[in-house]
Amino acid sequence: MDNAGKIGVIGGSGFYDIDGFEKVNEVRQETPWGEPSDKYSIYNYSGKEIVFLARHGEGHKLLPSEINYRANIYGMKMLGVERIISVSAVGSYKEEIAPRSIVIIDQFFDRTRRTEGTTFFGNGIAAHVSFAEPVCPVLSQALYDSIVKTGVIVHKNGTYVNMEGPAFSTKAESQFFKKQGMDVIGMTNISEARLAREAELCYSTIALVTDYDAWHEELEAVSVREVIGNLVETTKYAKEGIKAALSEIPSARDCLCKTALSNALITDKKVIDPETRGKLSLLIDKYLN
Ligand SMILES: [Zn+2]
Image 1 (cartoon, rainbow, N blue to C red):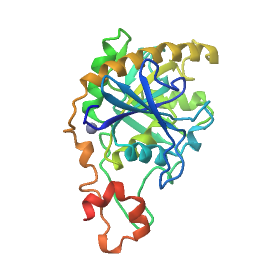
Image 2: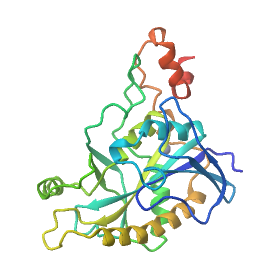
Image 3: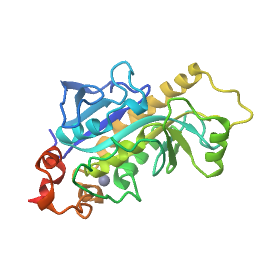
């Protein structure tokens, strides 16, 4: 096995496993933050260890607002993951970002109502990580380079509006975000990206475009069958691209993700409650000892 940190993959709608990889283990990982969405499946791919998690759980049981994002990300950290590739279905705000294309997200806009559950901090310890650039530039570049080679249309950057859901947007909401220059809309990724940053993990989003959201005047609302058809098609390219990216991703990390907490912790270590500190030991011990 490669000694570099493991690569995690979080699969969303339509992406429930990684076929073509050799599955070596399944782990039910308890975390101080409760239960992750599902067991983690460990795969071996040419000497690299890949840790896969189905975001919505087995059989897609969880709504975006029901996902235990903290447990999902902390579980990855506990299993030795250093980089997370997230795959998720999105609606598009732009004619040129057509269904069946892929966007490598570089920005997020938060329209969720989530506060609790989207940070590891609080309860007696304060930290503010830098989040101006919310994804890992190195990982995103490797994913872009590999996915573009599969022949699918890939947009290099894009802003992802994260709505709360579970219902899709109204036309008014959809037209509003389109006017603001947003690119795509989804329901899950900003919470993961933020927690991954706090956990000093690299994080990148492969967004699979399934439809034009509600703004498009000329198109009737898409059917679930159409959306699933588009999803199945782009998921194939995403999987192929991820496989190819695995050999492109450098072993050592020299991005800023791995030191995200170095200037973020504010609380005087003398006043940190031992229980809170224990829960966060994997993230903060190296800065407090
Ligand atoms: Zn990084």
